[in-house]
Image (tube, rainbow, N blue to C red):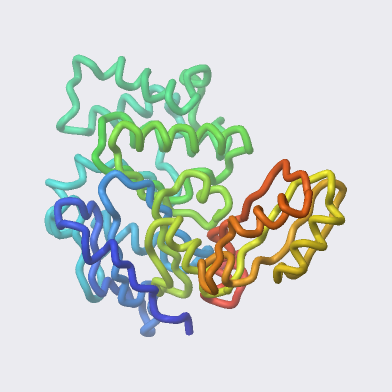
Length: 339
């Protein structure tokens, strides 16, 4: 069983108005008692890009479906934009854009006509500005050139873009994206990352579910990691990384220098282990005192020791723990799990 979730001090300090999503004991059990989601306590801060992370089959999509009122929880509660779900769905959902479990579309219609129909179904949408609104959404997701093409002829990545365009037809307080880069090539992934950053800069809270930790890590300010239906940890990405480094007792040091052999000697004398020298680059595992400041010295002392020994330091830094490092450290298992 996974360990209990790491305490998140930000949760306790966050005012209710700044909690865009909040769950307490949220649980979903299916026939036979199988728990898809087990007692989830989650807080998504307003203005964050929140990565909801975990291997395929860990309960991410089931959680999102409960948040959006598509299925009823077995136990527990969920609030979205301050209102209880699913009860307040009619009031809440017009303020939320969502792409869940792949986009729905009419294959016999063009991409543009799909969006025109989706927009017409929104009672809050102004019909006088519909054409312009659809055009902007297509442009934002890179589908303007394929707007007249039948949706049935779209690739999987293009269908993902069309679903994202539908979610962006109106300004939203919250955007919920379930595996938004599914089927996209590397360039498409970069474009989606740029779009998420743009939306966040405009004040939209983005709740981003994915099993691609390395990809999502590049845009998230906060994260929660799930495994086997349970929440493992949540918090800011920086805090999660620092916590894991502290628990592991070391980080990874990288020094760029033309004096690599001498640098390795100096670092070894000061407790750096696992040293590797590759051309003008020296890497090694830091002792706990260097990353935590314990023992009366800090990381800067290593740099100072190198300089005093005559080593020409051209680059000096540490790698923080990645989200994958965090998951493996907390669960003891790899992340590429199908379920």
